[in-house]
Image (cartoon, rainbow, N blue to C red):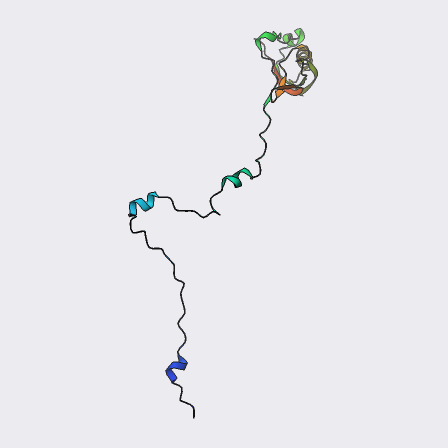
Amino acid sequence: MSAPVSQAASSAEPLPTLPVAKTEPPAADASPATSLATPPAHSDSTVPSALSLASAPPGPPAPPRIELPSAAARYLDNPPPRYPPLSRRLGEQGQVVLRVRIEVDGTASQAEIRTSSGYARLDQAALQTVLAWRYVPGTRNGVPEAMWFNIPINFVLE
């Protein structure tokens, strides 16, 4: 006949196995102070090599350096706008903001009113003035380029 099976052996469940963290013993000659100061060794996958840096795609190009036009250069000698006599008598004051296209030769080819002073005479005097002025043209990466530019003109009675 067959041998009787022990009741204790058949009812016992196997013990679960727990993962064990593997640690390397410290080097015999390394003290705790020197092991902290020494950087850990890296595998080739975490340290970029000179070859991988050279083959990395280039970053986005730098934005172009733009310098806006100017009417403030001292050598331009742009006269202030003429205050319309009727506007002076009526006490009209205000600020006109003009959008002016400055060409590469420093002349104004177009001008339009961006913000009105509220008085047509002041707006027209400002338009005539900025169209007659000379400008330092704007540049993109050091090369003169035609650009639109906002110019405020203030009409203030003293």
